[in-house]
Image (cartoon, rainbow, N blue to C red; front, side):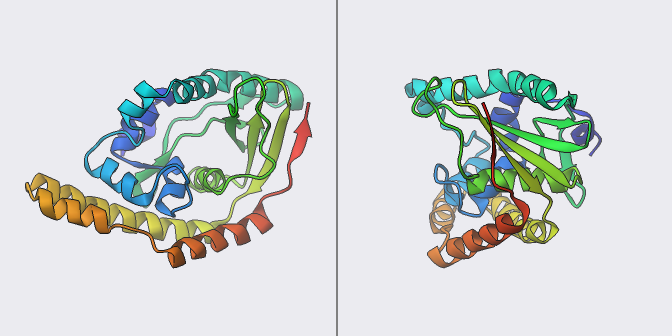
Length: 246
């Protein structure tokens, strides 16, 4: 626990290395089946085999994806500086925070301002970095990510900054939803249980059983629809409409 509390991790290194051993806030949408780019089954396979959720071969063969990841990482300090000068609120960085009830659930925020508001920064790159538009609505996976941070760091307010180079920034204010978090924790702990089972099968050399276990780890449409509705209801109460800044 001491190591979890004290370490400071470069965002790029965190994505690649820490995702192999913990459930991060960016994984919440995947566990709930609300990330269109990574299924729950794929996430389980990546955790069990201690590999990155981002396939190295995909990174190697997809220059656009590499550009987007590098762009977002390099531009985070720019967004923090813009926020500080726009709102006259200094932004600080904090160490990774584990969940007090289960240190395998953790997260690292992009920043926190002098009013204890957590920042989550998303630079848009599609269709390219010059012509991207800010989000008009918060994607479910990013809302869940920010809710995770609010509950891990025990803060009441957060903002999601959807930043672009030429088309301004949309800022969404989000407040902490403890009820949603209790449902999220239940889903995450069930996932961790499946993760442990899959890892045990691998360590025991039961490859065929492991593959069947992974293949069977699907999310039903009914469960996905229920999770979608749960998040929608939370967003209606805890996520404000965006404010645009040029």
